[in-house]
Image (tube, rainbow, N blue to C red; front, side):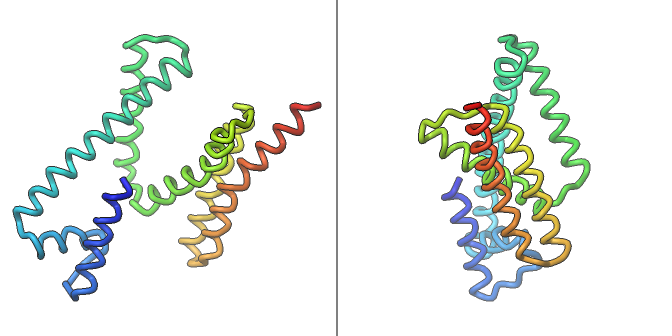
Length: 185
């Protein structure tokens, strides 16, 4: 994933630095590919993009099916798995129908990644984690990080982005520390 993002960003930077007319930042990579390798390159890029997107969709559907049937309902049933897959697809369709812009989705993923950093590090360090404390503090961390990121965009105040990441990292850490304090009592 990081390699793909790096090369796409590099192509955009290449197009910008060579003075290629770009109508929108969203089309910088496509403009660069079209300029340097032509229509054939765009066709190959489109095929690779569809292939990559289909593997992401497949992975997400498998994950939600496993999470829903095994972890949440404790039933290893194909029917339950398919029901969760269907619900996930409906949720994805609603997101696309609501026309949520790419910035909001990017910020949401950034908030999720920042919030999951502390639990992943603690798990890697083999610390005992309370599932409830980590779950609820992670939800609160994601919500507060998303709130501050949206405030940053609306007010054009970059300090709110800092607050967003501090909430994403700090709230799960506080949740972990509180869980250790209250589990000893």
